[in-house]
Length: 252
Image (tube, rainbow, N blue to C red; front, side, top):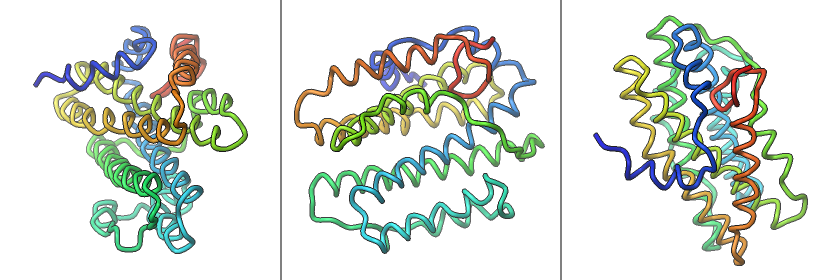
């Protein structure tokens, strides 16, 4: 299948492609356990980011508590504070009935976009965990990469600028994930290749959702701010990085 129609906007948005040195290291089968582990954790972090945005900016207490409960079993497993639950059964329980509500059009769009994103990221979390189990890869806690922190350091500290910047950062994280899935897929076994290519559509939509929300909040043109974070993101991707992770830079 030709994925160029999904990838073209993503590659235009990003300021650089993934360096070949990262791909060379990522395609080494010895690094697959680390890569899948970090990918799984990144899916949870993406869901957490979306949840925090909804809880901070639009959710009432009941809706916010429902979101917390929704993610709690995934967090407990990932932070090694609880047993491994039945993720498939958990996913089937997800519903919108107790989710936050608002009459504000932008708030409604935030809720709709982020709830879909959370649902998809948690589904991907379970799919990565399943891929690990099939390959007898145990889950072991690992440290986070510098990537997200490196961008969030540049977020402005007063509203609504904080929200605009966080949404732009979210767009870059989703776009880079999409680009890396596509870059790595050709070097994976057939099942993983199929799985990674299946993720492209949702990741490509996620980055556009984040950008649209940021533009709505700002009212003014956000292009200069988008370019600013694009340069920061590219620097994190193209400079040497001591840790190898899914969003890391050039391996040392």
